[in-house]
Length: 144
Image (cartoon, rainbow, N blue to C red; front, top):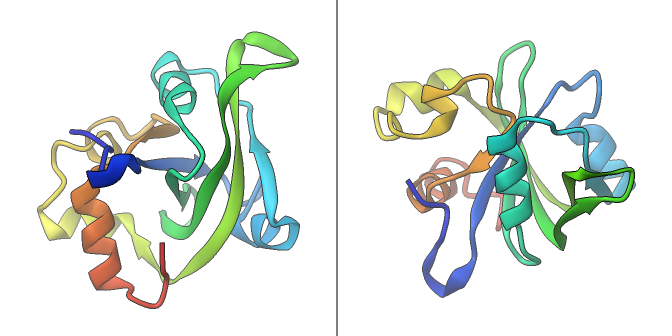
């Protein structure tokens, strides 16, 4: 399942515990360096990120779901604190209100092959273009 869309724009999903780093904080700060990821598959996704790519921000606690959208503004690159790890710069784009819950995503029956459904512990991953299109229909107020 690919996160590459027509025109080269790619889609990713990044999970965060809202007590650690929430969509509220990203909206306030406008930009952040996404770091702290250690899983090899998640690091691969971060290394693939390029400026202009879209990242769905997902709160993993409480009622898990997609709560916002960010844009990659600095590409995936080695973490200056630990070159074995990777970081990327995210810029806030919009909130998803109400959040698109994991329950809704599963109930759609459209994304069984996506790592979000198959590998629930994976923190950062490619997102299918079909998900981006579906999200646009489900929550049209957020332009990305």
